[in-house]
Length: 214
Image 1 (tube, rainbow, N blue to C red):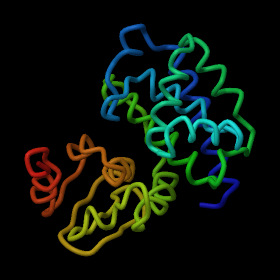
Image 2 (image 1 turned 120 degrees about the vertical axis):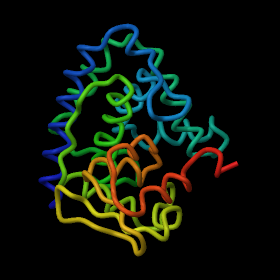
Image 3 (image 1 turned 60 degrees about the vertical axis):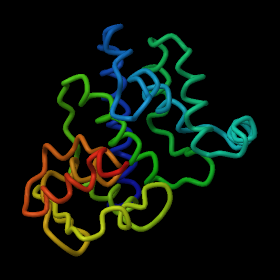
């Protein structure tokens, strides 16, 4: 996927997410998301921070003791203190802009809108289609053995193949399904297992089970 096409998808996803935010009930805002320890409200707040500038990010990192993960968590929680009706306006204000947070490319905001859109809607029982080609581009960013996902290392021994676009990765027993579900799995969302099939699914489920991780 070319950069311009990716930005078109990002703009479309931000617009549809803003529409979704306008439709959420007070109960839905407080619902636990697919991100452990994060409410729907926290995830939405995080999405509105995608254009944080260098100075603000540096101050936040210092406040978090130099921990990037803690900075992401803390900034989202602080932003979550805003009235929920602000989030849709903040997200719409980004449409058309190509600005990113420091050190990021277009692939990170693409990844964020696709995955966090599912983090919000799956627990709410709302259907949100994932564009397969865009999800494949995001998966290409996630699959290599790079921080923070380490997908290739975590999921070694399996071949993952999309059923709705031309994408596959890995070596081993085959697991297949929609590209959006594979992207969720690569980013650590085991809720995606219910959308996958293939001879490797049982072994993959065992590997990712909480009991196995203890």
